[in-house]
Structures are given as structure tokens and as C-alpha cells.
Image (cartoon, rainbow, N blue to C red; front, side):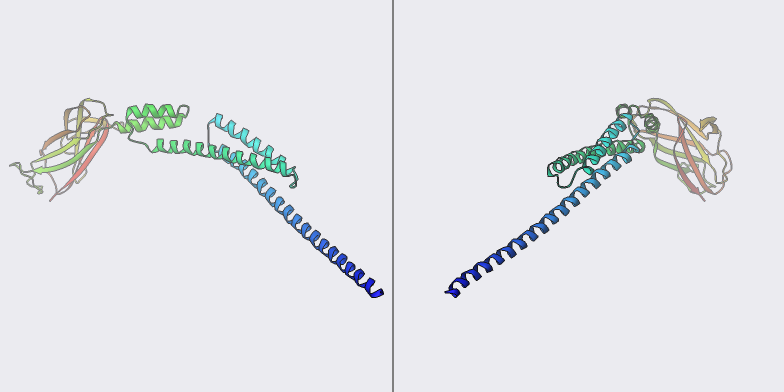
Length: 290
């Protein structure tokens, strides 16, 4: 009889002990899981703090890259907002899921706004670089670009200079030929009786139309200037011309031929022909006589 009573008691005891062990193990597992989740939440919060701080620093850096007071004021306001949210995040417990979720949404908004300012400032910087490099704008393009950079006086001055450069004449297809007394080309200095200079004024719709006086200088191997057809101005100096010619220019390609008859002794070597118009040197070419 005692054995019959003892056996059920033993079974109940074993089951109780097993239940206690199971509950203890389950509780420990839950504690481990809760601890892991807490550590993960802490890491997530720390990562968010780092991002907020990084964005605030980026706003500071961007303010040094722009001279526009209006944009700087906007960047300052966004930076202060970012720093305020960072302060709220630092004061929030990682276990406050609702507040953490709100600040994470705010972080996404800050990231999006920051990206838009990065694009805008990069666009402005690219515009400035393009304006600095631009040297072929026509007058109409210059006026349009001037409106785009209103208030940027230094860029405007730079663009004005480049438009003036674009309006300069340019001599293309320059060819210098020494002629003998029969009008045939020669490379012998003893037979040279004249120099023939052929070139064209390049097409340029930005250049002013009208009568253009072309001055040509022929430099000898010794550095002297052949002939004397009067003087012309170049870089605030008065230079001697070997020959001059006036042609009508209407913005289209215009061919020009000029002659200089040899009236002095020549020496063998390299002769350089330089062409000038409107106070600018518009082209040059050399020829060697033996």
C-alpha cells in the first residue's frame, strides 16, 4: 500500500522539479533575449546620434562653401534644427520605442533636406566653374548668363572679359610665300623679291562689323622689322608695321592677301610674320629662307 502511494508522489515531485527547471531556463532565455534587444536598441540609438552629429557638421562645412547670405541663413536654421533633434535623442532612453521611432523619421527628413542643399550648392559651384572656363559665349548668351549670376560681381566681371575675348578677330589658314622676280615661290634668300601673305579672317558673329585695318610685321632672323608702313598700337605700345591693308568685315570668313616687296638686303634664316587687328595679335606664321 505504501509503495502505491509513494510512486505517484515521486512522479509529481519529478514533474514539479522539471517544471521549475523549465521555467528557470525559459526566464533566463528571456532575460538574455531582452538584454540583446536592449543592446541592439542602444547601438541603433548611438548610430542615429552619430548621423545627426555628422549632418550638423556637414551644414557647418557647406556654409563655408557659399557666399549667398540667404542660403547661409537657411543652412544655419537647418543646422540648429538638427542639433535640437540630436539633443532630444540624447535625452531619450533607448527603450522609449515611440520617441525613438519619431526621431528616426525626423532623421530621414533631415537627410533628405541635407541632400537637396548638397545638390543646390554643387549646382552653384559648377555654374561658377563653367562661367570661369567659358571663353566662346556670344553676346546673347552673355546676357542670359549675367542674369543667372546676378549679385556675383566677380563672376560677372570675369564673364565680361571672356566675351570680349570671344569677339576678337582670328586669322586662319595663314600661308607665307617668298616670291622671285618672276612671281614663282622660292626658298632661297638671294632670289626672294617679295613676300606674299595669305590668310582669312575667321567667321565670328560676336565681332563688330565694318572696315578693319590689318597690320603685318615681318621679323628677320636678326630680330629687325622689314619695311616701314607706319605704326599701330599693341598692348599700350606703338609698333612698326611692314605693311597694312584695310578690308571690310561683316562677321563671315573673309580672305585676305598682302604683299611686301623686298627693298633691303635679306639674310638666311627664319622670318616670322605676325598679323594684328583691333589692337590684338590675331595670328602668326614663319618661313625659312636658305
